[in-house]
Length: 260
Image (tube, rainbow, N blue to C red; front, side, top):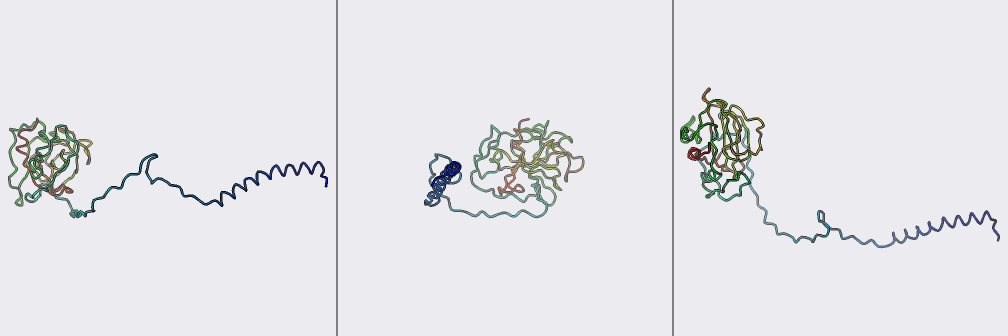
């Protein structure tokens, strides 16, 4: 059967288009009918070419009792009960003052506080011989003072006695405008009270340089009006998770050798 020239051209074009379609259909059939082979994927987070890490034995889980926060206003260290035994054990302090040293006796709060380095006199212009040891003096409600009062005119700059982080800015009924600072060991608390105001830019979490101005002497809180002074207190918290009470350390002998 003879085809006209036009028919032959049409048939040739159809064959040209039909051949690729048939080839693609053949490949698709082979792909979809072949069995799937699972890929050996690396675990999430693994880097290319890295060897699988050996399993690490995990220590048995322990449960740490949670301490519920006290209701209402947190007590000031000025209200703290008689000295309690500090927790035992060593802890590695974070980087602080370049002259900081570790405590020689972890159970001795005085050693923990004095290990930080020689203190800077916290009130500008005060000399060690001008200080009076008021640590054991009695206060209202049968309380012991457990601190030293450093007399100075209102507005005298107050400095960080050691390097460390501000853990709390707080205004209390007794302490007035107060600042709680961790020492270089990350544990000992340095407490400054009756401030007239904070230094500009002071904030919780701020890392203080040794000798940096943190506020100014005042008579806020239960200080007698006009009796401007800094209530300076050092103590080692009984509970590392709390800053409100602990074993007091007498600042007076430490300040006798304080840098001016």
